[in-house]
Image (cartoon, rainbow, N blue to C red; front, side, top):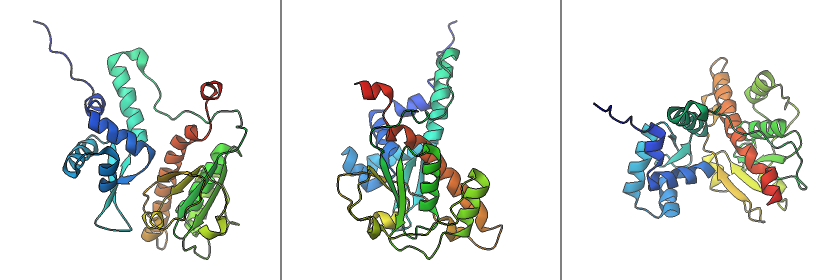
Length: 260
């Protein structure tokens, strides 16, 4: 008797559906709310919600309640989980198709013009300075990077300073929060909001930058006397660093893109 054909890997089954694939590609660029996905995909909300539920069940998409409007949730594509799922799918087809689920490195050549990235948050005291420091550290001067806030705090949160120093060897103790208005007139290729509130009030920087939203919980909201607050900053820095590693290939062209 011929054995039954093995089922396709879970990632293949999930991603093969045209609407789910469209949702994955939209969420690969930015975190979105359901109503925004409805507009971008052009399908009814109940259908979008149904397929998002399947993607969440498969571990590819996560959801977090909006800090701007608690009735809303932001959906996020877990690129690291997708990389692992793709690696497992390749191995299931043939062992030679196994690959390491890591994002590609930043190209070694420096572009003719450095891309510019702005990280925006409300207080510019935790999430956005962490993102600024990590991107600057990982790109070694190949990217112009800044951070600012809509309502900047008096100083950088001490837990953010400590986590960057301990986990990444980066010192931002001398950095001070700045207002978004101080960057008016500057050109940015990417404006990335890390706070649901600042996304609603972020000014227009012109030149049509790529607008990206990373819905990341405020680690200071869970902060308190050690050791309560510090682990929240460790988790936040780790999440931001993962997102940045997958952002790197988008910031500079590959040799093939330059030649074409």
